[in-house]
Length: 326
Ligand code: RIB
Ligand code: CA
Image (cartoon, rainbow, N blue to C red; front, side, top):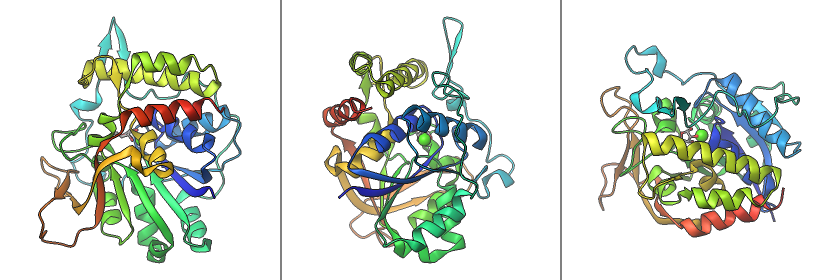
């Protein structure tokens, strides 16, 4: 029986691959996709989401979500593009993790649904049998807003499997990972909501890196989704080589796709532990840090699962398998 999933995305290069996995995998019944501010502004992340859905000829509905974090931007100094977001240039050409638009895809001719993502999330979850898994792979603003507006949705959410956080690895600041850093309060609301939450952090996504050679193999699959994925991975490898060189030269993580594939086969995640996890919202050097309390007797009840490793070979095998389907 396919698993019902709602994706929440800030499309983005790796979000696009995650969307393709969710559409192509028969094990997933993709109920809808919510866009959110994150890698780029809401208009861009929505357009990029629509372009990806259009590429696969899917009729999955897209709902436009929140254009800004819940409160972070109200505090001067808490919000400012960090050094880590500016990647740099190679041979005089700008390289970046995420371009304003997914230029390898034609502009979308399909439109988002008229209802905003937060109210659609509430309506859909409240009408459900409690069998929907939410997979946020961007800042958690939409889900946190929905929880605040209608707390009853918590009992209607089967599980939240989110790409976000970092225990031993960070990216946006010395302490934080981007999805959590962009809206720390939203992340803390989700983590303390009572939902079953699994974090797929940078510790896992960096372990599941994809190499330039594997990108070539993906491109040779030849399907539209495979060719687009190879373009996106190659773009990411260029950026990682400049700004976050991986242990393996010419490789890059495809963060968001790992969270989606974990819905299909949880064993793609490794070293999964149940711990107390909170997010720093103090606005200081550690703003947006995921604080993992591994102690046997944490100060507060344990509240989330976190995967600190991943099965890289299985991840790449699953990527290729589903990309052969489009
Ligand atoms: O830190 C990685 C996360 O931030 C990914 O979801 C990427 O798309 C960006 O949103
Ligand atoms: Ca993302």
